[in-house]
Length: 202
Image (cartoon, rainbow, N blue to C red; front, side, top):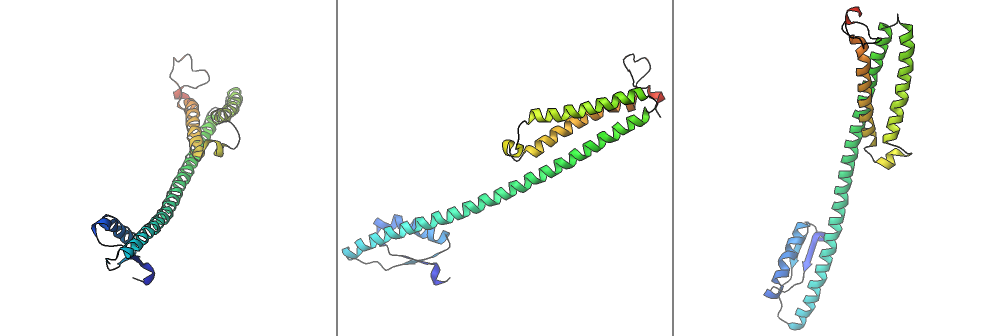
């Protein structure tokens, strides 16, 4: 161990100082330093000087502890911050991918319904109008749940993940609504409206 890591303890070894000496030694070793202990002296004047030296080394050790604790606290905080940030970024990325998949499924079903009912132009015109109205409703609903500007600042880092989850939910609900036109209905369903019989679907 290098000389710079040595810590000189100028404390008497009698019982009055023993309770202070043990934690001093423990703290020095715990912080990675090498304790050096002076030889005991009996002279009263020297004992008084050693008392002051002992008090001084205690203050220095407290400073060392505080400095190390502060450094490691900051290090731990930064580590946790980056871990949380990376985890949140990963969650946001996964949520965005799921949103894209939900929109692809919705678009696929919507396109399939238009193709299946292309022989009914009146229905297709109403469907397009309804789909556009639904998109307007969806966007307005998202805005009502998370109103205001600077949403990331207002609602925190989880905003992207939360709004993505809500968007996925809305897309899935609309997909199930449209799927009814592809599944068809049974004969005798007087409320089927424009939905074809299942036996009529290709």
